[in-house]
Length: 465
Image (tube, rainbow, N blue to C red; front, side):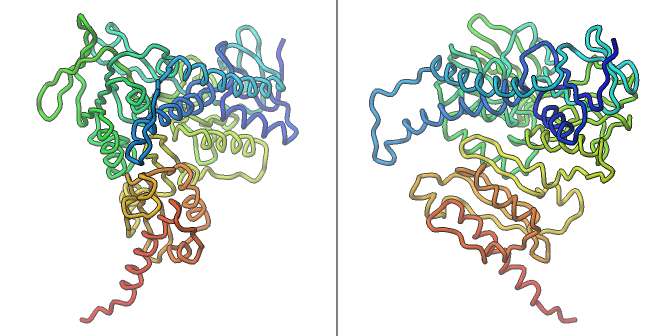
């Protein structure tokens, strides 16, 4: 028997739940369709929350290791990995149970959905018709076609989050967000860690100085890092596994007990019958316009499935926007320049707000930049947190275009920069705002001051013929 709704959401993760809740708050009838696996979405089950739980334990272990530098000598310190993972499971179970309870307040259909027309789909044998749909099917781990990889075997990020018995050594393939975060986790809990990255820098989606700063910090902790590597093959050895890569014009063989592939995720677009719904997609994700609408005007998409930034707040915003635009006469555009502010939870952390140098250059936007290192900041010196820098970009009128922070607590410090970009503040606004001393937060005043002085000088330069 056909069931009919105003809004049908495919996926119960961050984007799907946000869209479903928004539509219901607008008085619409809403159904949620999700697969047969665990409910709650990537962030809660296998992404943000479990990884940050493990990273906190590794951070404490690292603090014990470096404590003598500050005059404190710990004794009897032992890393109990099964206890670390058990704590993670307890925390994640609580988060997941709460989200499942929220999802169960909707009509919930379990099973893989498949479109049969522009306005209908089936879940197993249950047909569903809706006036509007939201595709929020998320992403899946990307397994690259490296010769010998599948036959040799490997760990994914899902596996690393559940490891209670650690390998003695690991080769991490990839240097994106998951790669750098979990490589540092493994290293800090006692695994000899090597990273192999295809791009020239770690975190290659960011400006090169960001990745280089993170690399220096990771190498200082003993992680071996090879960048600019072309992966050739993987094979099993008698006592472990081997990765062959071309690095610096030479073939190099690296060996470890285990391999961890961290080469990103890809949009989950296969097997949903998007063709029957006239929804365009490819390996890069479902195609959407500025209003998160697909090529079918009845269908919207949000979250990882679109191939945009894989960030929870972006997914939530996209889901909310989809529901609003589906049922409101006043449509709102997706503004990724603002909403894609992001953080990486390595140590030191990374925080990015607004535009990067790469984006400014690509778009032909004139900018000035100023950089200030943590090693010259009083609070950072006293706390032994001197790795990293803050970088501010401003246009010729002094309006702040973007801020990058690599340093302690960058994920928290970046929120001031997000506000500055949101309110279209200028660098002199930063100087007029009080910043407490001595704090890490006051570091943002130094590049702002340099930019103000430089731009003021340039405005007063008289060019004589």
